[in-house]
Length: 237
Image 1 (cartoon, rainbow, N blue to C red):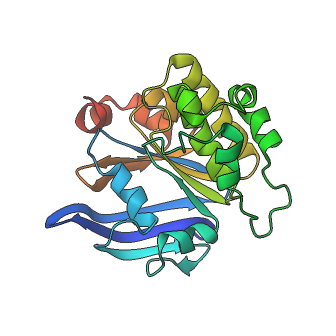
Image 2: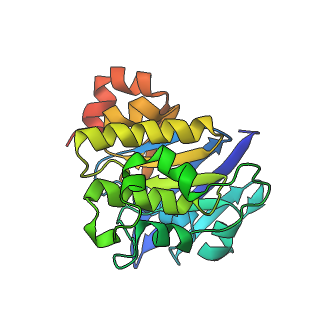
């Protein structure tokens, strides 16, 4: 894709001697939401960790805004405007919601409308109501919202969301879906990994189906939802 903000070509990655990713290729355009779909252990999280430079053994080409970020460290990639929200809710349990947000504050280059706590509280009203509560006192859904909000305080241009709906109550899943749609409307590019096909269908433009570390299918969510063979072969538990 000529207009791709994020491009991955020929990505291979290893955990120890285990070869996990095999020649992965994907693209994310400006203002697009793309899902990585697959079973638990398919390699979705490994793709994201590889993009962010968190795996020492990987090869291939990863470009962000046309720049090869493969040689860069994770903090350097983050400073270029690519944020990462891991599957684990790594909040600071002893800090309040506001203090957690301040930890993530960074001025984004060329950001005409920077993220502020008040703007984030409009996106995640639950956090606004709990702004002075310690992270440890938040529900699982509120902690997930906080991890996303803290990443946004860095004013990224693109964000990697690893399993944003996992373990959340249905009403919180709906709130998270609305938040992803709002972020897309604000111009943010989003790559998310998901096992929840319904959630992905709600928010995504396209999807890559991942199985055993390989991209098995690329297409629009409607086509995946309608294709029972793809769902049975690569997505069914």
